[in-house]
Length: 145
Image (tube, rainbow, N blue to C red; front, side):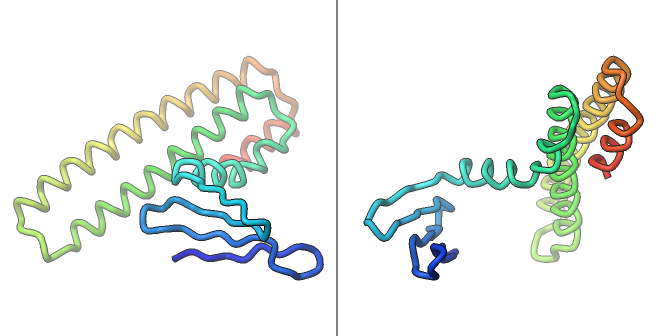
């Protein structure tokens, strides 16, 4: 169970967060106020922190949005590829079960790869249309890495 402690500037416990078995995060303050955050809300909050460098950049919003989409697609593609590798190493499944699950994961990898290629094409087009400065083009390259 996830239980970080949030403290105020005096070091006193101001709030406590917990995640239950469903992934819903529950935060309770010292005043007794309880806040439930859904797994989707928790993921979105983490994603916004993960993309802070993109948000802080001096780039047009369309390019920022595409960079975030590309970053998310890359993460999903990596996760699905790792899941496929774990599946292929799983000896507890029959060959038929492994094959069926592998086909599904391969289809997901193919779909994500296509979406990533499309997003990269859209980014290239947006960069050309935006007439970015050399510094901005360098920033795009840095954020893609």
